[in-house]
Length: 401
Ligand SMILES: Nc1ncnc2c1ncn2[C@@H]1O[C@H](COP(=O)(O)OP(=O)(O)O)[C@@H](O)[C@H]1O
Ligand SMILES: [Mg+2]
Image 1 (cartoon, rainbow, N blue to C red):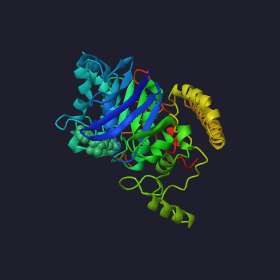
Image 2 (image 1 turned 120 degrees about the vertical axis):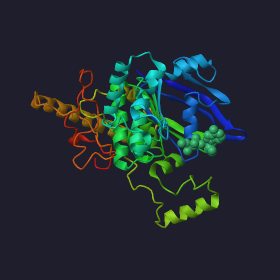
Image 3 (image 1 turned 135 degrees about the vertical axis):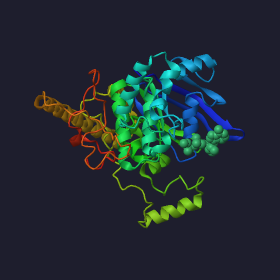
Image 4 (image 1 turned 45 degrees about the horizontal axis):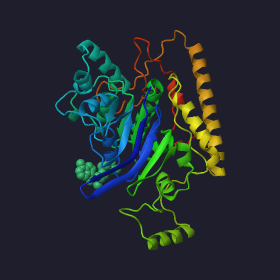
């Protein structure tokens, strides 16, 4: 099960340039959290600080009882084994095949024999839908495939903490939906603590259990998704609706005159280009594919949200109760559907659930994905098989629900 990552009073500068200060938050064990913020607010710097690649001036990062800002190089090396990291650009070795790239952490950090390495690498390659592309070099494949290879590499050591820096950058919306779904499925399977750094609003609104928002060198808010998705905090609200009207400007902060002008424009019915979604409702969170185990995080998360409910505004409380009821309904329906399919499909030779393309093309072809990419064909039956997932794809924009 994933471990908690507890950040307290963290401050980071480069020379005289302060990036962010006094950041305090706890990534709850086994839950999926997202850190949002406009470009250049230091999200990638934060992620690198969490794994000790960058050193903060102040504050602590406690992982498994160790403060990684203070510990020895040897301790840090050990703690790093808990992590799987997908860097913004995939960070693959250009002269190594995908296979060797993905095998790298196993060869580096374990004493596994090559046949064991092969089993693990091929399992992860299947999981991210890259079967058949293992001999290619990073330069020979598309950005989306590199991203998935980076994710496969991040998973080979069975990490308890997974950090993903902009998993969607360079991906089209459909690919983004798949990679987001994959993260939820992985969370359901291994209960890892996941942090996604992104400025993708769709991901932010449908994937994480918790959301944090960096703006003007500070963590404006961090809390359960239900809290931020119903928040009236102007920065949070503007960001999550992708609107140009609000405190977030093109470069730095807006002055009062501009804000007044915007208010006048809004009063005149002129829009700021944001989503027209109804903010009084919380979009249902993406659920694991059918056949996946239930996410253990849900129960713990619920408890936390329940405890904070009385302190939230009445409209937020109502929206949260409605969304919880809706999610329960979705889960029940999905479970019932799986039961039904299992009864029908006994011995019917279910598909492997792969989403892959042997030809190395990023797009799986016109007939795919009829089944979602999900668990690898479980030769050893340690993983569950997704069943008829085509009918149950979760919309990542949540609007068709
Ligand atoms: N190693 C570094 N040395 C100096 N400045 C850096 C370094 N890494 C990042 N920065 C600066 O930190 C700021 C935040 O960068 P980054 O974390 O990449 O933003 P984001 O990921 O939110 O878009 C930028 O102004 C960037 O120039
Ligand atoms: Mg970045």
